[in-house]
Amino acid sequence: MVVLPGKDSEKIFINCPFDEQYEPTLRAVIFGVQANGFNPVCAKEKTGGDTRLDKILSMIYDCGYGIHDISRVEIDTKTHYPRFNMAFELGLFIACRQFGTGDQQNKDYLILDTDSHNCTYSLSDIMCKDPMGHENNPELALHHVNDWLGQKRVYKSGKERDYIGSKTIRDYYQEFLIDFPILCKDGKADMNNVTHREYIYIAGKWLEKKKEMEDKKLVVTDTVTFTIGVKKN
Image (cartoon, rainbow, N blue to C red; front, side, top):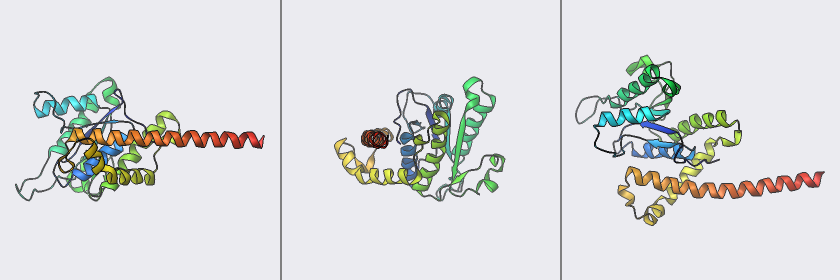
């Protein structure tokens, strides 16, 4: 079931490409993070006057978890240079866990890539942490994020009910995408030019409504179960 992120919920650092082609995958990842009760954080957020690196270092320090998509470590067709930002930020995250103190040593992370075997050739030093391949499919990326975070939620709570099934999260996301144009209109956002913060707000509001509906169904289900139990006795 959906768990909404609160003000003090754990933050997840999202390290990924920011190009137009990747945007659908980024949105799916953010949706999965929020549906599991975590707050997404990434360098797209415009905060203060710090340099980009200072901002990234601060975000990494503040986040207990990280999702790192290194699928753009390839030659750019325009510049003819590879893009190392994602691999660099993954290295910073791992170093923070390795050499930090206290809670920093409890950091954990998920690695995404187009193909789970790409790292064998491009970043073999991290092969102790199996990357998850999403094949440039937003719903597959959502599946990996949901499964990773769902296991963490169940481990902490001890309640299997806290895990959102793969079909359920996919259905939720498809519903959300259908509702997205209306949500943008209601929120006075330009659907074709939604900002990062606007998207997080819109997705959060939709999930809030979905949770309300879930909670009502849960009350009905529990009531029916109790009634049946009484009749049997």
